[in-house]
Every structure is written in C-alpha cells, then in structure tokens.
Length: 414
Image (tube, rainbow, N blue to C red; front, side, top):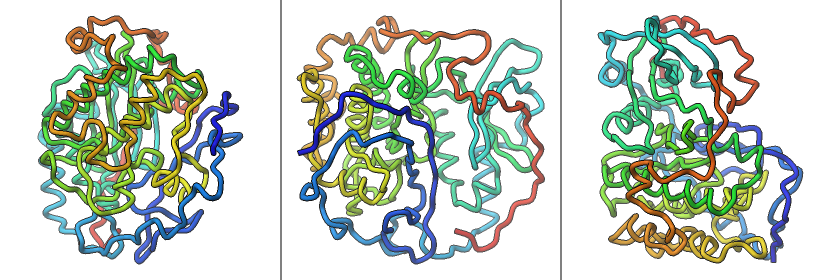
C-alpha cells in the first residue's frame, strides 16, 4: 500500500486555471478541465503517496460531463448574454452612485495578481486606514459568466458579521472595473506559511481547524456553501487568528439537504460527490476541511498527482494513508471528515457543525473564548508597517490601479 514520506523536498508555488471548450468530454491528462475548476500544478520534487496500480480506479470510474441543460453549471455550449440583465446585476452589487471610488484610495503594495485583476494594499486618502482592495475587470466577469459569482462573494461579506469571515467595507465600480475593499490581514495566507514551514504542529493545526469550523458553521447557517476552502483562502491576522476569504465560488440560498449540481472547486479539495456529478450538499465543505487539516499536519493534500485525471481517481477510491506515530485523535477526525459517503461524513448529520465541535480532537478548545478571540493563538506572524508575509513576485511590482476602458463585449461567449 502507499507509504507516506517524512520530508517535503519542494515548497508549493504555482497555480493554473483552465476552462472547458464546447463539447469537451472528461479530459485525458493534460487537457482542459471543466469550467471553474482550478488546477493546482505545484512543483513537487516527488509524490508524497506512492499509489500501487491496483489501488487506482480506471478512468471509467469518472462519469461523463453533464448535458448543457441539466443545471450543472458547466458551460459546454454557447450562451446568449442578456446585456440589460448583466448590467443590472452589476449595478445592484457595485453601485456606480457610490460616494466612494477608486480615486479615494492610495495604492501601497501589490499583494496578488491574476487574470481577474489584482489585490492591492491601499490607504484611504485623508486617513491612516489601510485595506485590501480587489479590482476585477468587468470584461473578464462578463465573458466568463461570473457576474453571479461576484455578487455572491459580495453578499457573503455583507450579510455575515463573523470574526473568522472576511468583512467588506466598500463595493463600487469604474468604467471597466469592479472593486471590493476589504479588511487587510497582514499575516498573509496559510499557503505562504505552509510553503515555508512545510507543516504545522498539532496544536497549531487544531487551533486553525477550530476557527474554520466556526466559520463554516456560520456560512451554512446563512444558507451558503463555501466550496473553495484551501490554504490560499485562509488569511492570518496580526493577532494570529484567521479569516476565510474569496467567496467567488460559493453558492447561496441553499437548504440543509438541498442538492447542488455545479461542478466547481479546486482539484485536490473536491469531494467525491462533486466528481460523481449526482448532486451534493453542504457536506462538501466538511470534506474540504478534512483535506486541509491533513495538509496542515502532513504537508501535502492526501490525494494528489500532477496528472489531474489521476487526482480525481485518487479522490474517488485511493486509500487514505498517514505518517507513523501521527496523533490518533487527529487521524480519527480526518478519517471522519474524509468519509466518501456524504451522509456518513462527520458534520453532515442533523446537528451539523456541533458534531464536528464535539470530536475528541477539539476537547481542549474553549469554543466561547475562541469565538471572542480571547483564546491565545499558538502562533503570531511577524508583521511590520510594510507587508512581510506575501509573495515577493507581487510585492516587487509597482502598485498602480491602471485605467481600463469601459468597453464590455456582450457577444456569444463561454
């Protein structure tokens, strides 16, 4: 059976996003994946888990992609965009009449960048208040049919007031961009720290997992499925407490046992029921927590291959392996969260997050103190007046909010 290695020789570095073309079937290796699935092409020197041939299910174990009209959310045919409806939705979420605009903020540093736009550390002019400002190109949002996703991201941050969920301060638009102005977390993201420390201690992983449990509980209580829990979306504050961010893949207005069919998420964190494409519930977030907890204490996701198709197959049926001597309660919790049958997964029952909080792994957690942030964190990141815990590739760039022409194409697009 697979053996788990004791050392990680290469830190995690890169990501690549791909989308499907009209009529694509489930891809063979190196072909594009369905829309909204983010592929994690990390540069690893070697695999953590050596999987024997007989442990990997055949490609036929994966179902074919759904028909374009079955409500799955995978775009496989051309769709006519309604310009009026799109612009109305954008205006509702990002009012052009807002008294605050991009000219009210001074760019200080680039914190992240991508095809959607960028995230910058900014200071509101005339004050000492600093924020993280996310700018998104309207053309990208419309052409990639992400207007609804962008609205959902805004809704999560405005509807929920929770210590471990990102808060939105301003939302507005310019001619060619949409803007979200949020809290700035100077500790960087968990991905940054894992790539340098390789893994966390059990007490540190327990602390982070407990705060994530409370955040997921709040999201589910308000009818949201997160669907994108991963190290990059977990931010650390200067006080050592965390915050979930980036809700662009979230689903809103979901009842407890309601089935959702959209094929969406990040490859290594996809729950088996998403891959089977028969519908899934809020239980997918508990699966992702199990994957993240495993990655925190071991240093790599439990099911991973540079071959994305193989990663899918590992998620569906590969054996779950742990290093020798690993904390028994932690192993038990991860196994309970990574139960492939959703109805048997910890957190999926009628008591939801309460069942997760009651697990012996969290016995030392004072949940009331944690909720009020009076429980001391086991790690406090080093911070200063300038960002320290962010990728240097972005930090070296000139922080400029470039003007984008207000040209938006409403042709037939994918």
